[in-house]
Structure formats: C-alpha cells, structure tokens
Length: 318
Image 1 (cartoon, one colour):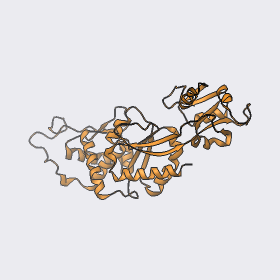
Image 2 (cartoon, rainbow, N blue to C red; image 1 turned 90 degrees about the horizontal axis):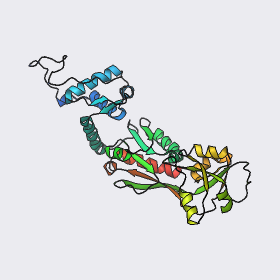
Image 3 (cartoon, rainbow, N blue to C red; image 1 turned 45 degrees about the vertical axis):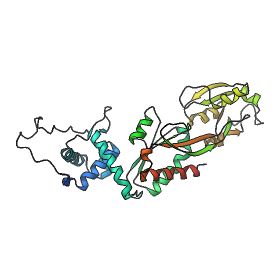
C-alpha cells in the first residue's frame, strides 16, 4: 500500500484548512501507545503491509496512525522508496529510531517479547555452516524476532554505521573502525567425485597439480586463491577450469565432473555422501571466520544478545 504524502503544515495544499482557522498543533501528550507501536513497526519493517501485519491491524488503520504521527511531528516520517517497494525513513524518523535504541538499554532486552529484525551480512559459505543453529536459537528464545541474511556489498560498512546491518561475517580481519571477534576456523580438504578415474589412492602433489580444479571466488570471476599462493611458494601451479561464487554449487560441480575442489572441510562435510575427501598434499592456512560490528552497537543489549547467540551457533557448527 503506498504511503500518502503529508500536506505542508503551512496550509499551501488545497486540502488544508484556511489560514487563520487551522486546528491547534498536536502535543506530545497525544502520542499514545498505538502511535508508538505504529512508528516502531514502520521503523523495523519499512513496509506498510508487513508493519500492519506485525501489529495485527489493517493497512488503512496503520495509514491513519501514520497521518496522526505526521501531524504530531510536522514531518512525513516515511516516503516511498525509489524502487517502488517499501518506504524510506526521513532523517527525523531515523533520529526517533536512535532515541528508541538509547532507551532500550535502560529497560534491557527481553527476547521473549522482542519483535526486532536482526540483519546479518554474510557470504553463502559461512551462512551454510552456522545459520541453521542460529535460526534455531532465535526461534526458541525470541519467537517474535526476525532475522535477515543479506550479501555483503560496497555499502555494508555504511549500513553498519547507520544501524541498517547488525553484523558482518567475513574472513578478512583487517576492517578499520569495526569491532572484531573470531567465530570459527576450519582446515581445508580436497574433494573428488565418487568413482573418479584416478581412483582413491593417496593424492600426491604431482597428481594434484595435473588434475583440473574448481575454485570458489568470493568476488566473482577469479581463478586464483589461497591454494595457488601456497603452490607458488613451492614453485608449482595448477589448472583452474571453473570459477564460481557459490559454495553450494562448487561441490555439485565436483560431484558431477572429473574436476577436484579444495575448500573448507566444514563446507564439504555437508556433501560427503557423494564425494571422496582427502587431505590436500600441501600446507594451507586455516579458513577463519570473523564477526564484525560497529562500536555504536556494542552496548545495545539486543545486539549483545544476538552476538551471544551467534557465538553459541558457531560452537555448535559441525
């Protein structure tokens, strides 16, 4: 349902009351619980349909409450998103959201009553490792909360600073201005399909370099990675014939071809039924995963609760 624009407060719109006969401005005492809940739902969902469903009211009822909020604050508060889906908070609405977060530490965070939406920016590989356990934790302890997993992008650092993203999970530890904690690490394994023509004997370095390889490129389109760096230090190289960004697709390519793939063992274990796994014939550093968040969120009790659940999910990961 579209957000209707607010009429100017000076009465310039044709539907405004004549100058000199305007209704008296609303007072803050007029801000009742229903209006506060409507504002909170719109701040969390940025979508009228979902916000109305969250509150259990009709979209027209929510629009009525939004009209009263706009009259109270003399600001549109929410305007249609440029893409035509959802709404965008105005600077004043963003400021009100910050006030809500300042108040929250005083009252603590009650997961059983929370209807908060948490946003985690994470690539596919680590998500497949810990996300099932994290979702189970949230479903049990915070049934009214929601969680969104989004792909990291060029604006992730800005979104962390603004509060649009709660956590970033990644392998690169050097991220200036963010708090960091290691979540887990994994050794590497090399996989081939069951029935591979080379057999199931030990995989030596010569055989490893002679075979075709699948590589996972987080940035997309790359044909060299940590394995190639390790090989170069030994004066060796390999032939990478397939590059993919998907940690779910790479094992399927290995299972359906004569290519081999070297990936974090935690990822490959989920596909072990159709693969033979071997220790790589060269030393490789551990694949590590870190959690990052902005200092602005560190003292937020809801954020701290989410981090603890994330640590638990990482410990429970296979």
